[in-house]
Length: 304
Image 1: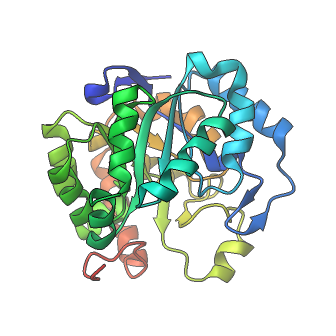
Image 2: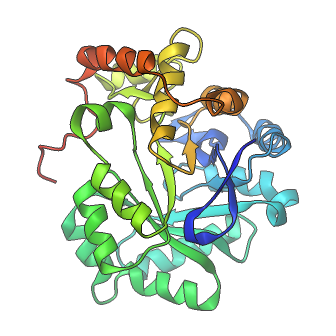
């Protein structure tokens, strides 16, 4: 496993992150009976054996905190744990955060993040009187959060958040489709590098938005918010997509919320990092972009 210095956070982070949705047996209002605590335990133990040292989860990921928290009990001191809140007011964020600490069997987070920022209005609430940022700043002061970060899909909102506070990390979809086709993430990436932030990449393995809920839930990957490249039939495009985001300078990728993509990333990461993306791979992605460009998972021209 390759490691990168995680920006100003200072510690080394594995090039692949374990996303907590992988461990979830209940997510997005659905049950995944084929999974279970013993499977989560085996998957987490295997991840750590392979050198994965960063785990990311959130209260909005179904029962992922419960499952992942139990699986991490023997390993907490050996890994870095990130959690989030999508609440924008302290009065609701505080009990949620305390519940997260309990479910994850820890008394601190290595990184705690304002989660899913998408509009300026919610950003204003989070930073306003009684907003969630009051809690985050207190967590940092007390050592409950070692570092503070944001996650977002809206680049303008993310950039505004960085004007309001000097966050340590950013989790964003630095995705081949959105970056190549729409320029999404370029300004944020430049700012993050200027500030030596820890840069986490979600959606590195995503092809496009789902065309419908029917398509999503009939697929092999219903726990993924967007359609990922298939790990068996679309490996060339999948590997090219990962190499594309790695060429942007991200510190780690967080695969979609299923074990197939996580294990694919772990198995392939050494080979993927052995060379930069080729011109042939860029051309292949550019050609494929023309087939999927009408299905962006975030539309930069839409007003949020």
